[in-house]
Length: 251
Image (cartoon, rainbow, N blue to C red):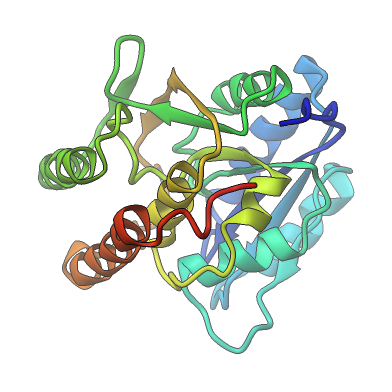
């Protein structure tokens, strides 16, 4: 395979629904960290049908943060996955990182992702559950469900990665395009993207990351609603892995 072209722009895609309180600190931290690290970037925040002042806050912050490029999900349907896909479709970078609006992801870890992609990896995956990783104030029930779900994914796909379900991951643009079409309209996109990338033969590096529980608002992920949806996506990609005879692997 030919060597990767040098990267020129990192697009930060952030889905946001009713995040007026969280966004100012989140976006300022990203812009400041990337600026100090010299990472060329744009911040694509997708207002996914918010009922609060999210859009007004984004318009105010746009005057303060030149790299901010807010957009509204005008697809006619909302959901975490749809908002992320909208952001991917409306971003310009030759690399993309998906981050959360609630400041749970550390921008310094996104800088590490940038360097891993620049070094030639197709994907950069973080893990909160390896040496050097950490979680702060993770709800116990969600932590238990998380570890069980990730264990099952590891076994089913024979993976070294133990944090597949975390949305905070980075990809070169050809990976995003090579994983289309996306089927997951909700939080199950967080497993569809990395699993498809792995199954389709893209390279990846794993690095320790940290996670901090939100200070404002309420979490949008509802475990009871998402269980069957996660199972569907995992089953779909599992069938591709073992029964497609390589039809969808990168050429």
